[in-house]
Every structure is written in C-alpha cells, then in structure tokens.
Length: 120
Image 1 (cartoon, rainbow, N blue to C red):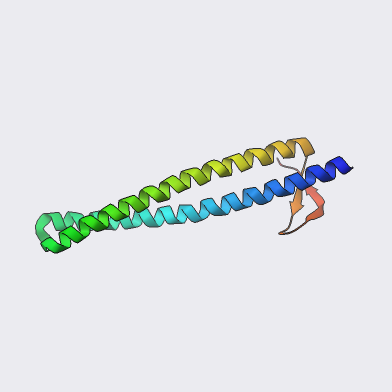
Image 2: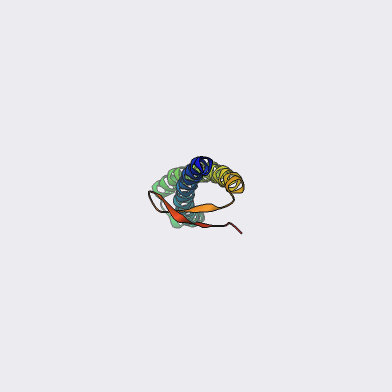
C-alpha cells in the first residue's frame, strides 16, 4: 500500500509538472500568434512603403520596426519549441508513471482524491 502511495505522489507531481508545461505552451502559442500578426502587418506596411506610398523617414522607421518584429517572432518561436519539448517530456514521464501505477489519480489543485481514472 505504501508503494502505491509513493507512486501516487510521483504521479501527482508529474501531473502538476505537465499542467505547468501545458500552461506555458498555451501562453507561448498566444505570443507566437501575436508576433506573427505583427510581422504580417509590418510586411504590408513595408510593401506600401517600398512602392513609394510613404515618406523616406517612415520607410526607415518601418525597416527598424520590421527587424524588431522579426526578432520577436524568432524569439517567440524558439521559446515555443523549447516549451513544447518540455511538455512532451512531461507527458512521457506521466505516461510511464501511469503504466507503473495502472491508473491516474484524480488531482485537484492541491491533493489526491480517492477516486481513480484509467487512461484509455
């Protein structure tokens, strides 16, 4: 019985780690999406500027903005890739623990309940 309790504690910790990783990925997906939209808007503005529809000082400003937006987009994408790898690692750890225990304990924000649920 004690072995199951210890294993349940490990599963609960793995679930929390997975939830944290998932929350991080969701946040970074929103950041990546925002960065992509900003990049798209900047490209439209740059296209107009290159056609001569903007003053020269605006063109320079748009190029600087474009470089900043590209860097932001790259950073968001890199952070998302890293966070996704951590999420996958947390998922694999949780799956391995579930196989050992045979079920996933229901987890509230702070404790294990007595009911259990099987992963299908």
